[in-house]
Amino acid sequence: MINFNKALDKLKSFDPRKITAKASISWMKKQIKNLTGDMPRMVTKLEIGKLYLFVYDAKHKDTLPFWDKFPLAMPYNYNKNKAVLSINFHYLAPKTRKLLMEKLLKTTNNLDETKALSISYELLNGVSKFKEVAPATTSYLYPHIKSKVLEIPPSMWNMVLMLPIANFQGASSGQVYKQSKGKI
Image 1: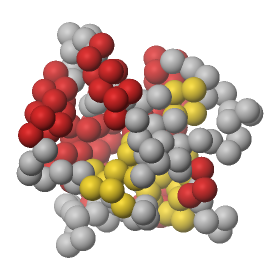
Image 2: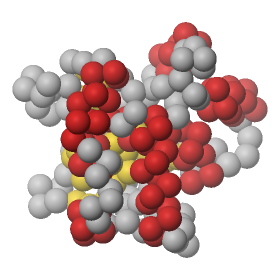
Image 3: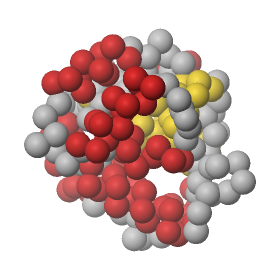
């Protein structure tokens, strides 16, 4: 189950003067308080081009240098092992996350009728200007998703991208961002 109390505790200790996410924090507090409007919903399947939050227990956590226990993932392909290949935006610094999302939205022109971004593995791998994808690409196995899956509506993507809710195991956010930047 997603531990929203833990996420809220992170928000309480978050200092918006240190990261330019003041609007995101304000939005999140308002959404939680009001519980109205275009709200996230729980789903059971990850669909290509949509954005999700969930709790994850990495299969090879003992051998990984670091991993995110609370990914912000956008699937773009399924591999032969039934893993969901995804962009985990948490692996990128907030400004880089926003830049990548803007590039994705611009290249695909908009959202399709199912409110999913029309992206594919071929598009992401074939376009060199999406260098930000490489360090953020990871695969997720359904048996290792340890919570309900929260689908984020497109109207909330920009706000959620800026929230400081990554839960890295084995490294700090700063260390992860530095390594990701080195791969871009």
